[in-house]
Length: 126
Length: 170
Image 1: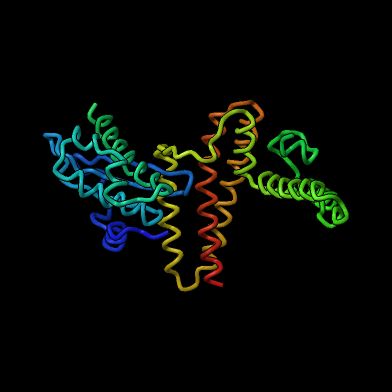
Image 2: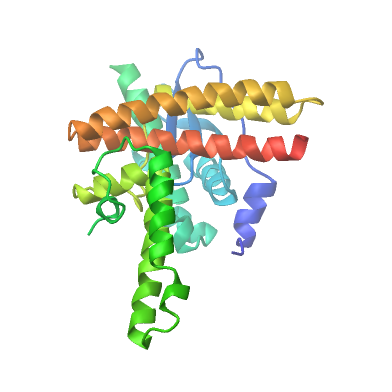
């Protein structure tokens, strides 16, 4: 199976790899995994008091498509409000990266990672 | 006829691999294409279909994950092609640490001792999950059993990665 140029670019030059210090203010963490392939994805958002995502980092163990999907969403969520970020759909990710049908679950994983991080933020705020 | 019936075994997650292999050999012999060499075209075709079914059944029943998925499917819960996302943070954090450990091992000049130790650790986790699955399936707790099967898939993925490292190292 051939990867698209965009997947290869994100895979070879992943954006925003790493972690934030969890004790830092406004850090939300989303952890998700795909049982079908054993991929694990951690997405962290740095959220301002006004509810805007200032920065994002990820760490993904998985295939090229999973890494590219998470790398892409770290770019997409920056500067967005939580409401805006929560509207990012796996189909947008899959389309941008030209993922083949068998790799759609990688984009679902990335969408779920954003949702999980937002949930984490909201549960901490309560 | 389900795979368990085909092998003359009770529908139970706990099965003896030795017994499974014995039955497999008996069935293979009984439906070997050579036995039907003098038979009609339709007999040959039937024997070949049966031989294929026997092979599929053996592969399914032998595997801890596939046997559980098959039993869940018999119970009406098909999880074998799902794209469900697992969201158990504690389990996933542990998986993340395991993957990091795998990376560390990869960078060691003499990794074999670490590989063995990690193998033992994963084998123990595998065993615990298999025990849980067995109990939950016997209690018809299908959703709970499915959750444990999903975890088992992560462990088996790690075991496969570790095996690959071991092949490279030795």
